[in-house]
Image 1 (cartoon, rainbow, N blue to C red):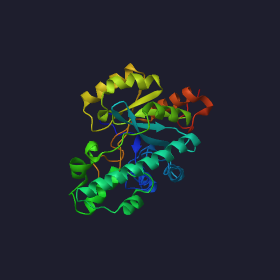
Image 2: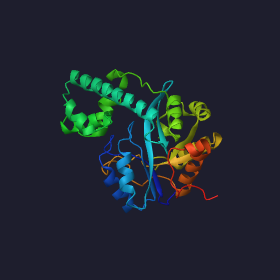
Image 3: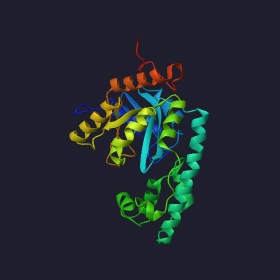
Image 4: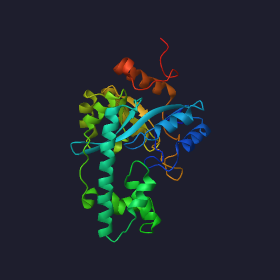
Length: 292
């Protein structure tokens, strides 16, 4: 969004997944940053949405219910953001329950593998810290706390990014299935941090015909040339260029509100959801709905 400060940060994690801050702290910070809209998009869980909506209702901030689903398509791991979902949709809740169990299983495999390498971590403590969505960042923080590595990047570089070495099973949720689940809950789907997706250019045509609505482009990590490449790709497949900070904590590089989009883009996203779902759209806010 050039030098103009974003009005909406659409990629935020709370302590209900691998963030460090509560919804209350997030919204207080969003007010200080003068954001008009935010979306809480925790990994594979909606546990923070009700609290976020309650806190945001006491402010002028628009709180968009969302989630970030971890998916697999062929050889590519793809994180898919969803917006405007009915977070109480039973089909969605059933899938998230399954994903929760899968995350626990994968985390236990990592803990056991690390133990074989001489790294002993307290699994019960990690589960308590993670609240609802256990992930590698929680394990990395435990490794730092116990003195096995100096910082989180070192934990990932030396141990947690090598999934073959850790002997992790492949993810069960297919990307096409995830898009269908999002559609069934009245939302729209967006590819998160596209630079991490292998074979992005060949995958997007397949996902777009299955209902993909957007591509996360506006992030300070991208150079102008990278943004233009993604924007062209989005134009070719009628995808809305979205954006967000992928915020986890004040200690991380990505700061709340340093990336995102204008409110007009959020309105376009709302229009897309309404055009797809009509009265079955999962969530609406009159401030985003067209007046015609």
